[in-house]
Image (cartoon, rainbow, N blue to C red; front, top):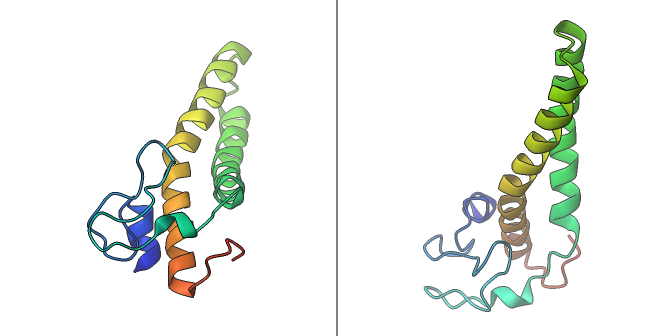
Length: 113
């Protein structure tokens, strides 16, 4: 449940208040339940997981499109980087929220899950 709430960008503890002030900057504490979100560090973990997921989704799609349709290089140079950037930007805060939710679930404040 903590991971699901974090993935939805809500407080992993109570699920009511937003977890982020800005794009991936967390509040110091939850406005609803008061849990200190600043004690849970995620560092580079969410970025690595985001890159891993996006790479494993997009690379097979790129290869299948190239094999079956062989679009022009200009179209590929526009579509694939744009799709990669947009999907990464969409997924990163959700993975960070889930990462913090996992830390809360495990009771790990050091950020080493």
